[in-house]
Amino acid sequence: MMKSTKTSMVYRSGHFVPEAFSFAPAVSVSSDIEYFVFPGFADVHVHLREPGFSYKETVKTGTLAGAAGGYTALCPMPNLKPVPDSLEHLDEQLACIRRDACVKTVPMGAITVGEDGKVLSDLEALAPFVSAFSDDGRGVADAALMREAMVRAKALGKIIAAHCEDLTYAPADPRSEWSEVERDILLAKETGCALHVCHVSSAVSLELIRQAKRDGIDVTCETGPHYLLLDESMREDHGRWKMNPPLRSPADREALVAALLDGTVDMIATDHAPHSAEEKAKGFAGSLNGIVGLECAFPTLYTGLVKTGVLTLEKLIALMSDNPRNRFALGGLDVTENEYTVWDLSAVSRVNPGAFATMGRSTPFEGMEVYGRCIATVYSGECVYTADKID
Image (cartoon, rainbow, N blue to C red):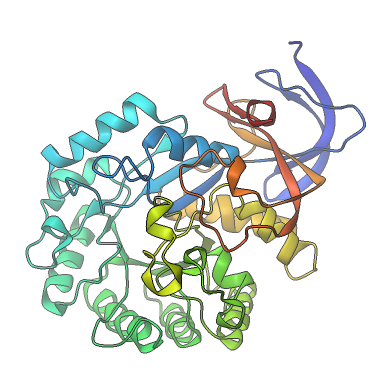
C-alpha cells in the first residue's frame, strides 16, 4: 500500500490546523473525505481482567478495543487475580502486557493487599512500574490506613486514585460517594499527596473538588461518558445499565457538564469494565456492575457534546488525551507520524456492540446514532488498528 499524504485537520499545540499529513505507516484513505488527525487518546481507568478473569476480557482484546476507539495509552485497574499488591503479583500482569498489549499499557498498583483495605501493599516495590495506586472497585474505609497510603505515595511521587464509596450508604445515595471524596480531600490536604478521584458522578462531589482546587490542594478527577450523557430517568431494566457508581439525577448530569466547562473535571475516562454475557443478563438488579466503553467513547461524546455545541472539539481532545497524559505521566503528545489516530467525523452509524473488539458487549449506548468513525490508530510507528480489520 502506498504511503498517503492528504490535507486534513491536524491537532497541534492544542488547536486544529489544515495541514498536509503523511499517514505512516500507510493508511488507506478516500480523497473526498476530510480526516481529523488526533493524538492518541489516553484512558486512565480501564479493566482488562487479565490475569484472573480472562473469560471477561484479555489484555489482547482490551487493548485492541482501545486501539479501535483511538486510544494509545491505557491504565488498567488492579482488581485482578492475583491482585498486583507485590512485585511478584504485578509481574504476572506485566507478562501479559508484554506479550499481548498493542498500545501503551501502564497498570495501577493496589493500595492494599488483596484490595481488602486492611494492610498496605508493597508500595515502594511497585512504584517504578505503575502509573498510580488504587483499590478501584472498593473504597479504603479505614481513614488512618488511607492517610498512611498517602504519606507513602507522596514520598514516592505517586498518585492515589481513589474509588470513593462509603458502604454505610446505598450506592444510589450520593452520600456513598461524596462522604469519602470529602474525607480523602482532607487527607490529601494534610499529607500533600496527589489525589485523583475516580468516576465522579454527583454534584456535591464536584463542589467539594472545586473548592479543594481553589484551596490549592493537589486534586484532579475524572468522569465517564455515561455520566455526562445519561441519567437515572433513562435507565432500563437491563444489565447494560448497571454500573457503579450508578447513573444519577438529571441535575447531577448537568452539574458534570458544567464542571467540564469550568475545569473542575480534568479528564474523561471510560471505566471500561467488561463482563460475560451471562453476568449481564440478569436484569438491572441481578447483573454485575460494569459496562464497556472504549470503542464508543469518542463518537458518543462528539455527538452528544461537540455536535450540540456544548464543548469544542479541542476541549474534548484535551479531556481525552492531553490532560490524562499530563496528570499520569503517560507522555504528552503532539501529533507525530509515530502515534496518532485518524477519524472521519462525517461518518454516521449506530453503536453496535456485536462489532466490538472487546469481549464485553454491555453498553447503555447500544443503538445510539453517532457521528465519528475511527479509520486507523498508529502506536509506536505501527498501525495497530484499521477499520478494514473489523469491516
